[in-house]
Image (cartoon, rainbow, N blue to C red):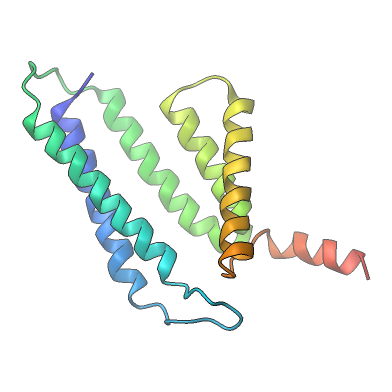
Length: 160
């Protein structure tokens, strides 16, 4: 089911977020100590992907020929909940680390899209977060805060 007004509104909102990612990532230094991949690469790539997908959503909504349905208050509520989740993700990223914050955000987003099967959503989010972290840090030799500092200190401090 397509809701033209909602799709255009959400596509435009995520287009703006994608452009913000691209512009803001240009202000990040080009390289970091101990990393072959600069810290601006991932946000820029994610911004480009988000802009592209948003453009597809907007184009699809504009060219859709079916009868237009009434705007669903639930759909708009989900959009604002997702935007709130993105803001929370941004605020939690450094203190909670990549793996924890991304896992929580993805679980929230999955549950927002389709309620139920919480543990399945959590498991998929945890696997995705771990794999992306592993690929970026191990394979690409980038740097990301994996876990909260207090947890990392407990683990590292406890093994000495």
